[in-house]
Image (cartoon, rainbow, N blue to C red; front, side, top):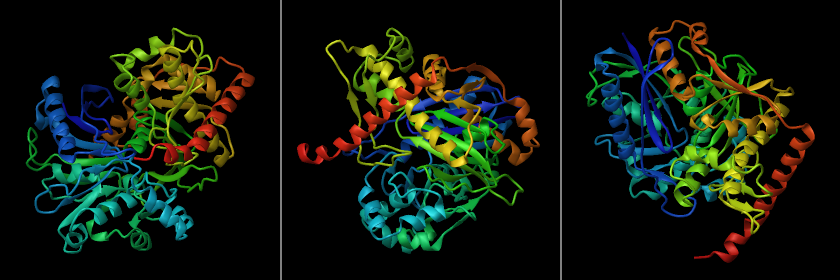
Amino acid sequence: MKYIMAIDQGTTGTTVSLIQEDGSSLAKVNEEFPQVYPQSGWVEHDPEQIWQSVLSCIQKALDMSRVEAKNIAAIGITNQRETSLIWELKTGKPIYNAIVWQCRRTTAICEKLKKAGHEKLIKKKTGLVLDPYFSGTKFQWLLDNVPQARRKAREGQLLGGTIDTYLLWKLTGGKSHKTDVSNASRTMLMNIEKPAWDSELLKILKVPKEILPEIVPSSGIFGVTSHVPGLPDGIPISGIAGDQQAALFGQTCFQAGQAKCTFGTGSFLVMNTGKKIVRSQSGLLTTVAWQLKGETHLTYALEGGAFICGAAVQWLRDGLKFFKESSEIEALAATVESTEGVEVIPAFTGLGAPYWDPEARGAILGITRGTNRAHIARATLEAMALQNVEILLAMQKDLGKNLADLRVDGGAVQNNLLLQLQSDFLGKKIIRPLVIETTSSGAAYLAGLGIGFWTSISDIKKVWQMEREFQPKISSQVRNLRLKTWKNHVAQVMYNKGLKGLYFKK
């Protein structure tokens, strides 16, 4: 038998899966790696640790499944998207840690660009807001702050890219320096009307085109393995997509108007808008979903993301020591019937859509003498769901129509209480698939299409299966009041952010 290997390189860890023709996973291995926080609001990863986690997971997946490496038909890659790095062409050594998508160090650069009047142009060309979230200002920071980086870039000694590009380069032994349209659309350097680096944007953001990868469709041959420990040479890497686009593809949301929400480190709602570019008027992003092998057109999407979702549960686990395993939050939160007025605003690295406030910081509000761990745990789950409500409402406003249901995926969707809260607060049916690792599934499907493992998206539709659905159980009056309370608390956090600089100067 032949298998597709899916490499899902995420923010807190790497997952490698072996996907069978029926879409099921024969083996899945996850390995976490350290997060680096040099100072408040800064987030980094060591690229070498990322690469070692990939190699380790590949070997463990093969050992677990007892599949011979020669039976891997193709490899698909999906990745944390905007995380950016630059490395030396000759040695492959990164010139600095990768700057993670959550990192806010380029806030001042973004403000300077706004004052220079570039915000409208950037949004028109890229579909993105001018925010530290995206890769363009991260590349600029690296080039400006690493000694000799700009000189080396001019001399052709450096290569750059997002994590997909770095892994592809490593897997191919330095022979392929490419990215797909979905990842390129998140850099703030690509014109979404055509898959090409935009010369005007490159000039504004001071990023030399020479360090950037070639942009290609999401499905097709990117390169083949070369000198990868544990793998034979010649395995095609035939599918790449950013994690949220891969999840949309893995959820088989192939029709315009279909949407999914991935609960990961952050939470991300993405809606397929087909060949049409929908310009958001509600603080959402217009992005490229994918481009398939042989297609001349791009498929587009609307997206809204909350920077902190599952990471808030990790914070309760690791920072506050509420429990030993993240899965324990459901039982703890279920011991109380409500939060008793406690509100958690998990703006640890600013607020994403629809607010886009990089300076906002998290808060726990409404605490009384009777507040205990369970109230805070439940409030954290409610915050995860309420963030998504605001994004979906904005999405519906942009589209001018309501969604019938929402497909969900990611590790946190095993939490039934979370999904019931999501259904209650959205007032929508929530659908959980049988396979919840749809990010890996999407990467595998794209890779399989790239080599003919699956012949069409019709084949993939037959693979997807629903496991359970959740229906709303609260009234619209209760729902509207809860959302109003949430918005008021978010506004309070945004108002109070100015106090940080006054009282917490170093």
